[in-house]
Length: 467
Picture 1 (spheres, one colour):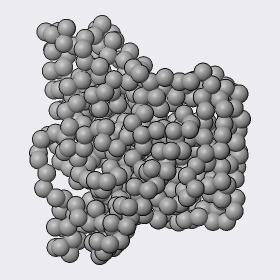
Picture 2 (cartoon, one colour; picture 1 turned 90 degrees about the vertical axis):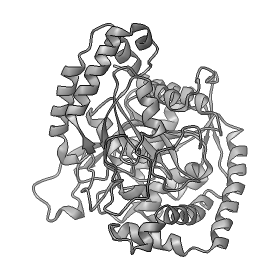
Picture 3 (cartoon, one colour; picture 1 turned 90 degrees about the horizontal axis):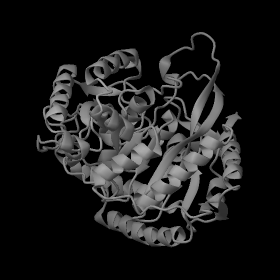
């Protein structure tokens, strides 16, 4: 059921939170090897479910106003949840924070949600793979040898395997959309600043966003309405939407399977929408300037731990933090100036279309431990092939969403991190993520367009590609 129908069913007495909690607990045990959860307290969840059940009986009028009534929702382990630990996927000492629940959690609970668990993540959110030496890798539910995406890795897996109806993640360069694409769920990154990050551990105050991972665009939109406190009723879709495709930039980036699948999706969309070439002249500018900004700001966030020697950070995180700490003020300012120029150019491009459309990742879901991947025109490092598709839009602060859009069939993988291969592989259908990018502040219109695209995909034959 959608989140709205779940709330209606609970008000009508057609759901049992006690029974649902038992199912959640069993599902958590079944999927524990994937490592989606960082923390859960089942006794606390049972108490909160009983309190909510009692409130519904005592205050039916109040229950009628709570949009997320009885929704089981997890949050990434960088959002403070009062009474629960926060590790952010690291063994390092985190900067001091208030013990009170984050603004995100408070809004969810005010809307009637049961925030029952915290999800695993890439260490301090500085990475896009979901691989973590402290917590263990968060594994892809479709093929555990492959990456779950990051840094909101556990959130993507939790939604995909039914550990709750939705999860809340953060997105600095793609950390909501990448795990959504790899795990086959919907992930929405709103316009920068539209959801409060109070009580969330920052990575980069310039590029950080918070948003939902959910099973449908409708659910993602409802969650965004709750988190932002903004109505989405004004969102509209043109009779024949105008979609911009950054073909020149994509030409040298996509692998063969991704390219073939994307072209099949464009052919499907072209029957109901106008497709035009549209992109800033230098789509690689964000890649050059994102890293200095994020590393410098992350180093400032964690300056106390770095000053003590950086104990508790893995080598893969400590090295970029140290590089950020060594960055000159002039280089940091130059990166911010480049960002301002890119934002203006991207805004102008987006003003001419209803949205940009592109694959969420340039390559099919990589294996855990994989460093590079073939494309149609050479090889790319996995980090660039994956993060490079999403970070331009976090860098610029515009809204973007990843939708499940069919599958690419692969042979079941074997991660180089798992030792010698055991047994035989077989075909596995890996989800394909289609990304839509909207104009600054046009979150309602982008969500409406995403729902339209979702409906077009649902009405058409399933798009599947074999690589």
